[in-house]
Image (cartoon, rainbow, N blue to C red; front, side, top):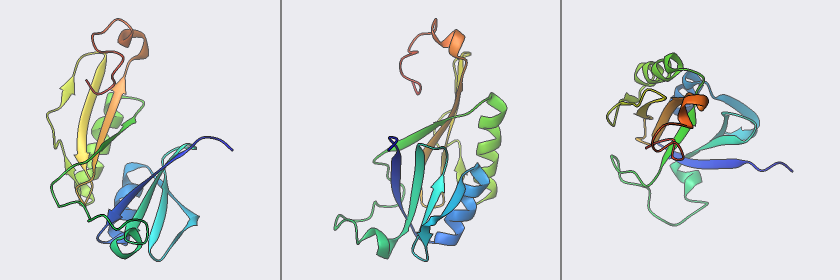
Length: 143
């Protein structure tokens, strides 16, 4: 079996979250979705599991994250600066927030961070792989 990551995210409104992630370019996998969860596919290896709060509680007894807090930020590489901008526009048009952190433009790398309707943080970034090898901090795509 190929190595994959399934990132589980508690969501207040499953249908709103599905629409949000579809607007960002994820696609829903009905095989791993039901009335309380949705598997949203970014790539063959990356999946976001959107879980209602009740479903979330079947996985852990830990409290739900407080609104406006961040325990993790996930970053997605995109094919161009325009794609980064488009993802942020889609976020604001579908109940999320764009530019929750300062825009990062290092020339060889461009990134903008967004939050989904439940304040889960995502970084959208583009990097020129040829120029990145010569750039400072090239080993860390977010810094």
